[in-house]
Length: 292
Image 1 (tube, one colour):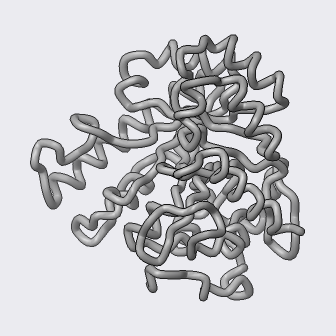
Image 2 (cartoon, one colour):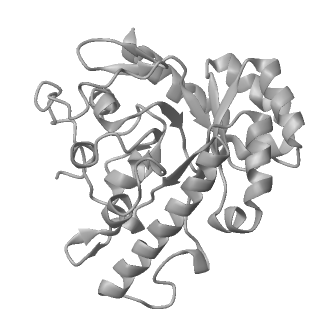
């Protein structure tokens, strides 16, 4: 694949979706053919973490004024679940998902599930594997590394079962290190193929997927319906993160395959924006214009 740009993928080709018989998610609006967009664009609040650390309520109010309807948390900035819920309700926002480390879920699942119920989350998402959480931190390579990811997938199935019992979904968010190939198979593929689709979904980060040399459409085709959440994060030709619309990722084409992917929730993200609120505004304006 041309990693600089994959806009050459035709919307007309390959629209015989594997999930064409499924109903389009309720939180979606049909544009043309199979193209669907969400009723509410979401924002991963990590993008505005410096502002959230100073004033949660004011930041959420600004996000809502721009036009976002959903947010995804990455920490609660010292606020209680009740305080977070109150702040969201005041601005008409919902928070379908929250990021928690694998260690947080291992050691404090009940607390995390209770907070999710209070706030109104529908998914708990492991956003990254750091330190001892990541298979291979002990130096394992090759088949041994693949086996480590299979054991991790088993753990994810267990967490997914606990989430289901609590009325929640469980998801994993990719970066690019999972795109390393072992025995002819990417580690991300190992994870997807060894997790139960009834228990584990994935939050696809389009920047990291493309940055790692993978093709989103290939993943949509091979693992139809496995990606209920996504991070809408753009990439420049030289690999830098960018506001949505300022890079080379063709999100209109991606969203044209949203039903096949299984996408329900779309969260804008930029890890290191120079002007956080300006960044989320620019990204929203680009996305909002897609159905103009």
